[in-house]
Every structure is written in structure tokens, then in C-alpha cells.
Length: 227
Image 1 (cartoon, helix red, strand yellow):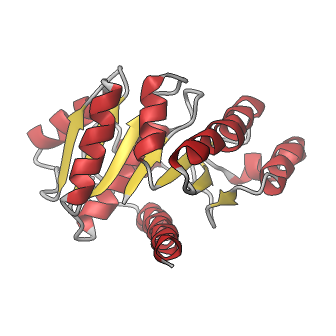
Image 2 (image 1 turned 60 degrees about the vertical axis):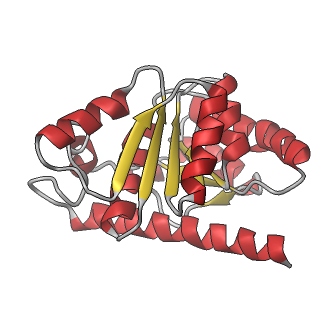
């Protein structure tokens, strides 16, 4: 399974999400490969610090790649080796974004309920992905996940029109939002949700649920392709 985490807008929490997801997948016993396709290389600094502090799961491998052809080829090669592949795409529209879309089995679109985030996410889901589907001649499922969510913002009436846009878009949405938690900030320095000094069972459960939804969506896509 290749999961590309993308949103053409920066600041949606893509990198934090991919760290939490990849770590959770590795701790669940999967061989995982993470491709950092962000020019800022924040993920690779996280990898380096995690290894220095002996907080790195053995089943998780990571590398930086900023060449669009290489992103595509590496992702497919690692998938053929039986690994779950996560591709962390920079928050912009460039060749690397489309390389990530072309190789993906699923596109995970994190966003917050702000106008800019929703517009960018919808542009990706309703404009870019259909172009890729037409070119590849097969479906490319997308899953929207509300990121850095809190109860006050989540219930604010001012955001209801944006939530309605998401509901009416026809794009699948994760069953639960990803809350704004200290645990996600903690892994920004080093480690995974499972290895930080003060673990958060709720954060781990959120990632396990999201991972299972991605796996279920992938199995469904594979079953449809073989019928």
C-alpha cells in the first residue's frame, strides 16, 4: 500500500500526521518506508534525532527524495518489497505532488476547517486527482481527515459552511478527526507516539483507527481491481 499525504497548502499538519501514522504502522508489526518529499527535510531531521535518542522503530525506514521520477520509482519498489509506503509531499503544487499522486494507492488529505485549507483540499480531490485517474485508467481513492481539531473550533457555527462543503463534496472522510494533542507536538522533536516519555493512549488509538481505515480502503480497492 502506498499512501501519499498531500494538500497543496502548507500548514495543514501533513508532516506530523505522517510521523504519527508511519510510527504506528511500524509498531503494529508492518515493514514501513517513509519518503520525505519536502524540500525543508523536516522529517529527516526527526529521523536523525529519533535515532540519536534511540527512539526509532526497527521496522521503519526513511529517506529524502526531491526528484519526481525517483519518488515514483522508489515508492513502487518499496511496495513490491512488501512494505507500507508513506509519501510526505510538500505543501505546494509541483512535479513532486503529481509524482506522489501517480504512485499512490490512496491519497490522504489532511486539513483544518479553515477556508484556505478546505479550498486547497477540494482542489486536490476534485481537480487534480480526477486528472490522474483519467491518465492511469483506474480509481485513486482519497480520504479527508480533519487535523488539529479541538472541540471549540469543531463546534463553532462559523465553520459550519466549510463542514457542509466537505460533506457534500462526495469525498470520503475519516470516521474521526485528529485532535490537537500534546503527544503530536512531542513527536515533532523525536520519537513516535509509542516511544515518547509520556504516551497518550487516545492519540495512539486515533492513529490506529486511521491506519485501519486506510488498510480497509486499500483492500477494497484491490478487491474491485481483481473482479
